[in-house]
Image 1 (cartoon, one colour):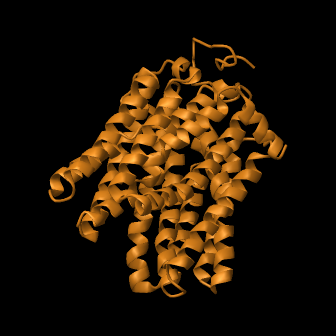
Image 2 (image 1 turned 90 degrees about the horizontal axis):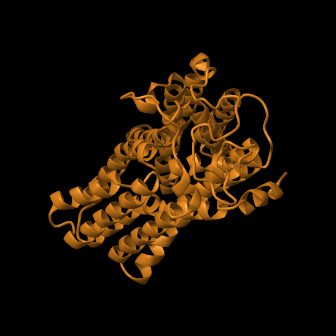
Length: 420
């Protein structure tokens, strides 16, 4: 299929708009750590305060995503996504207005912004089956989604630094969050978003987490996130001894390039077989490719190893999205996808927290070894929980896509998900 498959996907009614709107809507989340740190420093805050504010935002975001995801499953996308985006943007506006002179108000502002970040990522994946119809298109969309994330997390920080250079850190925060609201608005006024309804769900306080297969997947991707988080810190330690910030930039760009290439190739192919088994194989390759980083060779070789280490990241995520859809209990698809986002983010934070002291006391190679160990731990979790993953909880196993979607107001060009 190659690029033709992606073009066919994007030509489907609503597809390009939903993907673009979701990426733009998620821009505040992708840029919040750097934007908050730059603002806090410019406002006279210490590095400790800046880091703490970014950490509080991340923690609040991790708490808010599954809660808002459950609200979306219960009440629909427009009633949750847009109000949440507006409140999150107002939280950042409050931070700009109040400044960091009163830490309590600054922490409250970033907590509100993080907690109310709309679960657009999970929402988009819930929409794909109804919009695209065919299973192969949905799986390709998951791969494109994973690739697009790499682009966003690369371009987003560059956009913030450009706004800071042209205007100020405060302006960067306000502009990025205003743009994020527009992105969310673009999504929720679309026909698919307005028509989408989650399938009827069993009332249960655990929601999506009552699926053993989903719990197994989340456990594995906690360690995948930890591997990625440890690489970001180990990369700084390596760059300090090999040329400074420019080397770090090359390493992170190489990691992103590897993910882009891997995701593009993975999504261009039509896969057969059970996705849970394929996920085990892809994560095994991901773990193996993390191990050579601990060799810490010269800069050119290290950049090439960074490309290699990123190759199976996007495919792992894309395959995980398919597994989430199969493992999520009926009527919990947005919540389930949001739990994956949260778990990955928490894992990344844990990896960062572990790799820092390791780099300081045991050196750069040991810090990169944390990534390898985390990758192997993810593989072990998947291997140990094969039986749980072998029994999909979602009602869509073996059925056409959109098993968690009961949109009852289809419009021209929009599949309700119950059609072939």
